[in-house]
Amino acid sequence: MAKTVKDLELKGKKVLIRVDFNVPVKDGKITNDNRIVAALPTIKYVIEQGGRVILFSHLGRVKTEEDKLTKTLKPIADRLAELLDKSVNFVPATRGEVLENAIADMKEGEVLLFENTRFEKGETKNDPELGKYWASLGDVYINDAFGTAHRAHASNVGIAGNLESAAGYLLEKEIKFIGGAVSNPERPLIAILGGAKVSDKIGVIENLIKKADKILVGGGMMFTFLKALGKNIGKSLVEEDKIELAKNLLEKAGDKIVLPVDTVAAKEFKNDTEFRTISVDEIAEDEMGLDIGEATIKLFAKELAGAKTVVWNGPMGVFEMENFAKGTIGVCESIANLEGATTIIGGGDSAAAAMDLGYADKFTHISTGGGASLEYLEGKVLPGIDCLK
Image 1 (cartoon, rainbow, N blue to C red):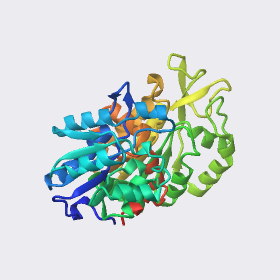
Image 2 (image 1 turned 135 degrees about the horizontal axis):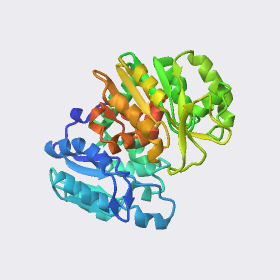
Image 3 (image 1 turned 90 degrees about the horizontal axis):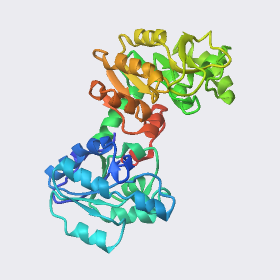
């Protein structure tokens, strides 16, 4: 296990903290500050210990000079100052004299945020010179950005190679819950997988067949499995090139994989079209399944009863359309109401769904990293965690 923030001597130190402030910004306004809120415990702890807090993050993809105009962290500094109720010094640079002087002038307990790490071309390439330079700005390094832990970048792996390093509270929590669900879960362990494509979840399914007691499959990916069983799926989403693989996974899993028994089907991919709930054996040629049906919601609730660890990743239908959101809502409610279970959402769309539905505080842990949590569930080594050991 990596060192954590509690193992570091912080008083008077310049503390570099890689956070994940990659939040949605529209017209200069933050539309969801969940990731900023998630970083507060580590930031506040370092302030309380008398450290000098130097924060940095990426925001979006930066491909052109134009991108830099919309991808500045300035609005994030303003929001962070509101949440901390103290001033945050925003430095619109990623290197150089202005940044170095601002850091040199810091007093204990002060907070500085510098500009988007991806304004530097070497960030995503893990340029050793850049990692070394950023490390030279601080005395100790804390990685609290789980959202980029599956990438080896200059701002995580690069700095950690040059400085005493530790995990922040958020990263520690992700390691405990998502890592724990895969390595040492309390049983029964039930995984619920949805989303559009089997291809996104192949590694997760293969790893969970070995680890989980049951895997409940919904979302668009269910139709590739149903077709592998020889069912007619009409115009439903399917990955033709993954049908053989789905067959193999079903064989390998025995009765571990539980597939939907009914679907909400429509002739068009839009919310205000006619729809009907039918058995998965009754899909017509001109119909497509857009959600799991009521019988499947009940079947999944029955499978979840008595579960001790639950991992959910991916919606059960096209949940952004109201008429095809009931499956996702139903599954979310079933998990939220479980007694005595550790319940984990692996980021992405399912996390958004739980928050939109007001169930966020009913889950033990909602991951801040979509791609990172998937790779962790696959059992992969994440460079942003590995570099702290």
